Image 1 (cartoon, one colour):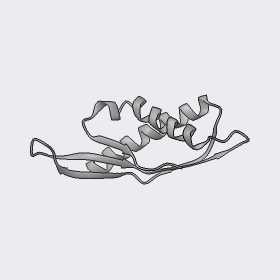
Image 2 (cartoon, helix red, strand yellow):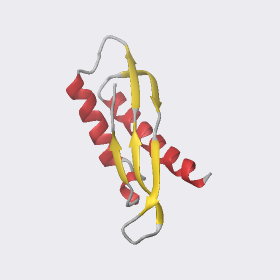
Image 3 (cartoon, rainbow, N blue to C red):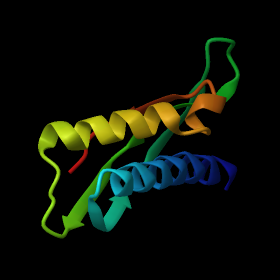
Length: 99
């Protein structure tokens, strides 16, 4: 349905941005999974909208260079700021957890 496609697009944009940023820092991503959740609710104008999307990324890294927790948090924060879909919508997008 359209709501799931929208949430998947937000999640995919974050993932692709994250992967590019991680690679630029020399990190090798072995796997990336996200169980994104969208919330279909009435917005401030009383219209139905996906008002919130929560991302729950789980990332595992290979290779000798492993990100510390602050590195991982910074990668997710920058990925969120640079994701063009998140920048294009009024939906509140949060990275709820990472690891």
